[in-house]
Amino acid sequence: MLLEVQGLTKYFGGVAAVKDVGFQVTEGTIYALIGPNGAGKTTVFNLITGMLQPDGGAINFLAKRLDGLKTYQVAAAGITRTFQNLQLFSGMTVLENVMTGAHLKGQTGFVKSMLRRPGINAEDKKIIEHSMALLGEVGLDGSAGLPAAALPFGQQRLLEIARALASGPRLVLLDEPAAGLNSTETKTLAGFLKKLKENGLTMILVEHDMETVMEVADRITVLNFGQGIAEGTPAEVQADPEVIRAYLGEDEQIA
Ligand SMILES: Nc1ncnc2c1ncn2[C@@H]1O[C@H](COP(=O)(O)OP(=O)(O)OP(=O)(O)O)[C@@H](O)[C@H]1O
Ligand SMILES: [Mg+2]
Image 1: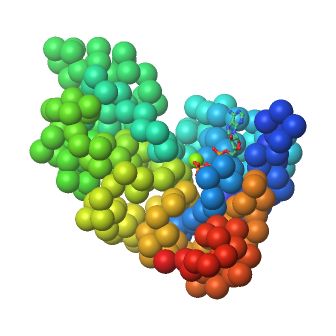
Image 2 (image 1 turned 135 degrees about the horizontal axis):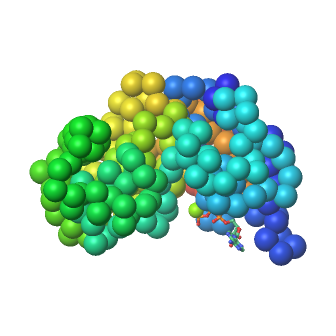
């Protein structure tokens, strides 16, 4: 098992944003976390990545304890993420944004100064080539020199994914990658995620777009008010009456 989350709990004030949540992610699969707004999905990501420390429970990655580590230690262990609200470096180019993920985990000043150096060394060259290849995979290599802020929103989402992939992670956490994408972009994204999985990458997907979730996820945990209310394959979760009630209201059906 690549990632094992057990009894994960986090309180904000007196309120449990995440309570006794557990799930296991097999290497080479896409695991989805779904649930209504405020269910605790992003908080789970913040706990896994060390942005928040849990009040209870354990997180094991490659059979080593992850909880208690700092964000940079979690990144170094091989876990990267994207953000629900994009966190690109808008003043940097598209290429530079990917390079920060490849090399330096956010040390933007360093990247800038590196790029300004007169003689770029062999290692830097490798990073540039690798970053350009990643941009090619998301169809953004033609925009490498543009400021990130100049890209349309859908392409900025893809850029953030490319940056998350740049360090060669074992596990990538994607927080609503389809939010704000049109239907063509969403289909492209789903195809891209499936291709990444075929190449052996493990992902956890938080997403409200049920069509995408049902298409790409191998297993799903449904959260509601911080607690897991269902776990299973897309077919099992879609058929679960409690999920339909909690997630969509009495009269609707999932996708
Ligand atoms: N830093 C924080 N301080 C206080 N409360 C927080 C904090 N982060 C999240 N919360 C609360 O915890 C609960 C879970 O929030 P979270 O962002 O994890 O939900 P979510 O499932 O990601 O929702 P959405 O689908 O809207 O993104 C919410 O009630 C939220 O208001
Ligand atoms: Mg969220």
